[in-house]
Length: 408
Image 1: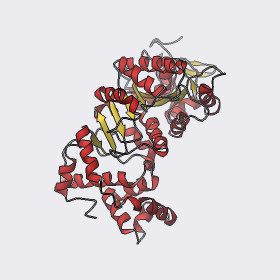
Image 2: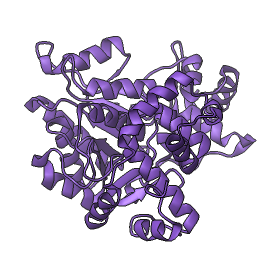
Image 3: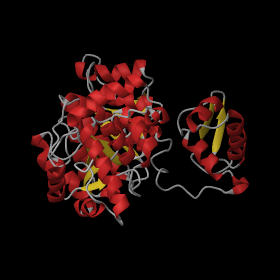
Image 4: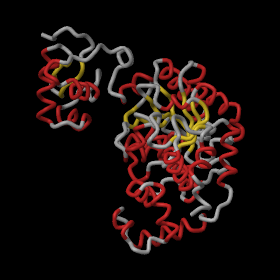
C-alpha cells in the first residue's frame, strides 16, 4: 500500500500546487487515492465508480490490493462476484505502475488544476452519469469556466465536415456565445474546431474535452486553438497527464461532452459518425437533443437526418432554435425578470416556464414530463401563469407569451 499512498505530508506536497483550497493531510490522502484510481481504471468504469462511491477512494483501493477476499465490500457496493473478478482482472495489471509522480510533475509544469467531486468548482451536472461519472478532472485554463455560464450547449459533428457544416457550426456557435451560452465540444477537426473558433471570436466561453491527457494537444494540428481555449476557457480531461487517446477513450469522452452541457446539437454527421455516440449519451441523460438538417444527397448529413427521424431530435437551423432546447427565447434567456414568489411556488414555476416554448404549443402532459412535476401541479401553475399573462392556452396546448400583458 505504501507504494501507492504516500504519507500525508508527502501527499500534500505533491498535490498542493494542483489542488485549490485548504489541503490537510486527510484530504490530501483522499485526493491522492482518487488520483491512483484514475491510473488503474479506464474512463467510465462503472464498477470502480460504484466501489469508490460506497467505500471512499482509500478504502476501495485497499480492497483491490487485498483482493476483497471477505466479500463485504463488494456486497456493500452491490457488486457481484463475477463483476468483481472481471474488474480485478482489468485493474491488477496497472497496480505496479511507477509513473504516478512523474505525471504529477508534468501536470505542475503544464499549470493544470486537479478537481474532484468535493471541490466547489466541480460541475454538478456530471453527477447525472451515476456510477460512470469521472472520479476527477484535470483542467488547463480557467476552472471557473466549468460553472460560470448559466447555460451551455455542446456543438459537435463530423471531423470530415463540409463547408456547409463548418459555416453552420460557426454561425450557430458565435450567436450562442454572444448571448452568454458556453460552447462545449471536443477540439477535433471539422465541426468541433469550427465551434470553438467561433465562440472565441465572439468573445464567449468555450470548453474542450480531450480523450487524452490535458497536458498535450490532440489533434496536434489544433495546438494553437487548444492554447487559445485554455487562455480564456478550459481544456478538460479525466485521463492522467501523458495519456494517449484511444478509440475507447474518445467514446467515453463523449459522455462528458453530453453531460457537461444543458443540450447537445449535432451539426453534421455521417451515418456512423462518432457524434452519434455523443447524441446517444445526451438522450440517455435526458438532455435536449438537436440536429441540423442538410442536403438529402449529402452523406455528411445522413446521421443528422437519422437523429431527426429515429431519436426525436429537434430540428435546429439557427441559434433561436438551439436556445429553445434550453426552454427559453434568446431575448429573454439572460435578461429575465425576477420570478414571482407568490404562493411559495417559485422553483416549480420556474421549472414549468423552462419546460415551455415561445413558439411551439405543448400539452400539459408534455410540460409535466419536461419539468419533472406531476400533471396536477403543472395544471395549477399554468392557471396562475395564465392569469398573469405569462402563458397562452390554445387547441394544441400551452405556450409562453412574449409580453407580460394578460391575454383576453
